[in-house]
Image (cartoon, rainbow, N blue to C red; front, side, top):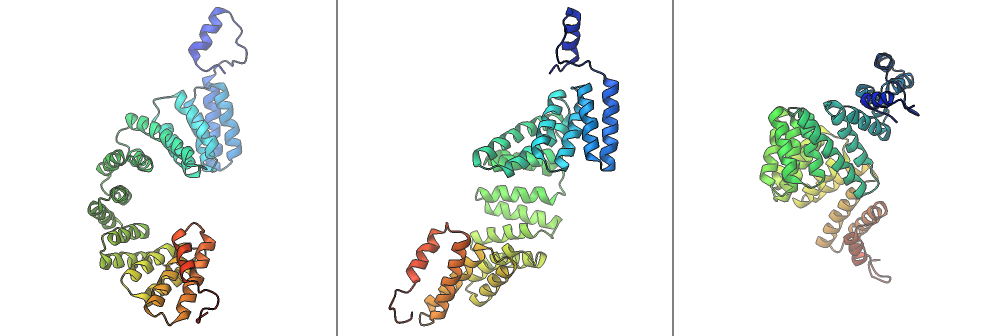
Length: 338
């Protein structure tokens, strides 16, 4: 397909017939673009796409029309088509910030939906490229810096992740999300005290963050600081009472504190919320088996542990340590307490 106005004029001047090329009509293209936007605003997305398609046929270099089509496809959740449209918008206008930013977002969505690690990382690398371009165009854009940091984090390039996350914080110091991301970056590098500070900075801006509270509790657990960990998990449960993972982590903390009855209660509550939680069934089995080891005459505890572990393995078979424990504690035929 012929693209630029210069190429069209050169061909015409040379006297050649350009097969498949259409003369550019900017006025007509803009008219279709405006009509497409009106349809989109009214919710008639099919009509909007038809008008925008006419716009790009009239002027293939009308970047805003390509971008508008990308917005509609993204709104519909069709990230593959959105990607194609945003790529065309960026090609048509390499100096437009928004299409580059939106293309980066779409690449991130496609990475999340990728079927394999290699495909996911390829999309992340593409996202990095367009976000870098976007930041060159608008260095002070908070979201672009934050998203670029997230992409570098997923690619395990922690120094660059930290750099752009801190740039985002400098642009928007009141963003709890940016401090939370910084905490995760630190956590992944084993910089636990720095992670805790970042998590607390985020909580000062917004205390209603159950997932962050779970991260904070897990970080305290890694330091064997069970009391502050317990407080963090209890706050997470208070903020998200229907969260099975929050109650499962609370159960794990209670188990390490040797509060076995409370741990069982937390795991059972997690299972009542999500019966498909392999982690909760596993944890419940660990508590019951620990009690059985402490009280070996109580075979009922062992049976409860084995039952919970069998269910966990049915949900998630790849738990070799639990397979080994099941074999170890399953009574042999003819055992006195069978």
